[in-house]
Amino acid sequence: MPLKQYNLPIAPSRGAMDAMTFDASAVSSGLAFLVSELEKMDPLLREPLTSTTYPRDINIESGGGWVEATSAFNVEYGVTGGQADGIGGVQNNIRRIQADFSKDLYKVMPYEVAMSVKIQDQLRGAVTGRSIEQVYDDGIRLDFDKYMDINTYLGQSQYGTTGIVNDPNITAVSVAQGASKQTTWKSKTPEEILQDINNAILDAWKAAQYDNSAIPNHILIDPANFAYLNMTPLTVAGVQGGISIMKYLTENNIAAQKGVDLFIGECRFCEGAGSGSTNRLVAYRNEKRFVGMDVPVPMSRVMTQPNIQTASYDSLYMANVGQVKIHYYEPFIYRDGI
Image (cartoon, rainbow, N blue to C red):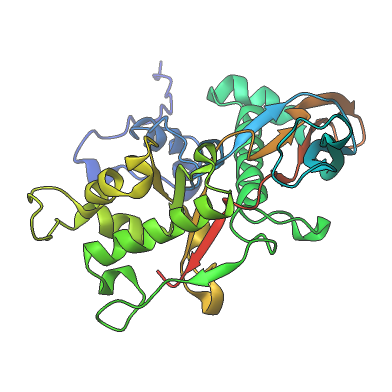
């Protein structure tokens, strides 16, 4: 009886690896995940580089709600009648005090930003471990800080407001030339730079009727000059070396002699803010009584609701922000050309 034949498949030979082949579809699909598994993923999400300094340079007061304006009251005193020298003793010739009240109004501007998060993106966040909603939230808060920076230093042009660097009610004066016939601080000696600072402080003090409480305690300059003052060692006759020009300035200015701790800090908005696009020095008294800003409603998420048409959740962030309020212009000084 003849044997039955079976056509069995021949097992592939297990020779060299070059005998094995993979088609393109296998590489791009089934095996592609192997590549990502061999990656070391950096969990840090790098946000845009930026800086905000407004909390350092102005006093901010929160509260008040969704108002359309804020106000501040002022009073001026006068004495009428009687003898000019103030000598009393005559019953019907006694001078009388009078008070003249006035009110200043300041604009309040709404800040509004919305975000829309697709539902599938929220679900994907559970897989990737990174919430797109949190990413958007961080971006909005960064945008608000940049808005506050611009509002503090430059104001909002669409609302007709200005900031502490460009207020037209403050007269800007160029600093004097040094021995080099230049006004820039890099062309001046440390003594000449100190003279520029002292002149600004003295002019403010004089304009404030020599009120010691109004002596400027805050000076803003451009970052390049700030770096120069801190990096350049002192070379002044009679003064021990080993310190920077900045330390020399903060210890020897006229405000320090009156017991005022003078702050000199960098502000990028001072760069090119002066006449002829020169750099500007801003000197003022950084206290609530003299200058400030109201934020009647701090920035927050005010509502979130589903959007069926876009398969997403829409959220609205809002704030109510006031303009810069300069209550006393006398001790506010601009010096250009540094």
